Image (cartoon, rainbow, N blue to C red; front, side, top):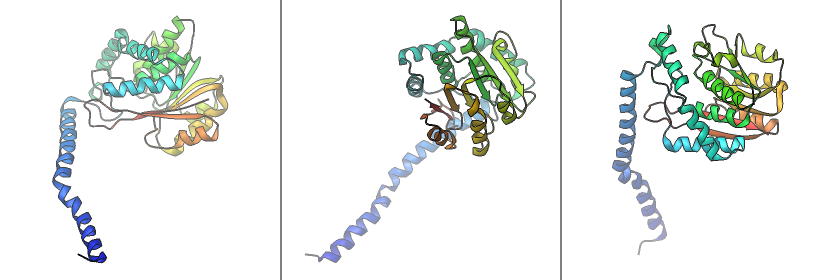
Length: 280
């Protein structure tokens, strides 16, 4: 019978060889995954015009995760959340406006014709659930998210809960999608430095969304600047949750709860962004 040292040597040898024995299966799984990403990437290269701020749909399972995320953050029945998400999907007037305005825009060569909201349906549902009187977003780009927020505020107004969105961007060409009625009727577009604009706010903020410069330093400066202007039950959101820990640390420092949602794009090479939420 082999002595103890020999048995140990043999056990170590088998352990060392195990990864090599499994290598063909491991390679096959990696190859399948990479092939799928490559197919999606190739399809996107020839069918999409976007060069940043990508748009896409979410997988059905991911949409269900988003519904439960909103339900927990907004303390609303998940069935109601699903209804609000379906509501924005069924808004044919908004969809037609975005399609037609995009087609006429000087930036039409860098934007897709198809309207895809992804995580923004979560923004919409949060506004519908919490009925904020004043929403502030930083980072507007074309104004797709601004339109989604405005559409939710218009629905709330029709139900007796009026609200407005202050949209901040440093680019003078930002927000062209949100400059038509009825959406423009609840949008205050401010062009300039976001920190300066946040410091100058003259009314309480019920919902704040960071979606501008995604460096951790700038994100932190925005949350610090908006903090004195927040209403008692304000909801803080970040589009940067998959990159930094800024909001979760800010939540802990200010005695708020924190929850994160991560997107799973449907048939797209991009891994997705997410929503970080902090609230009391």
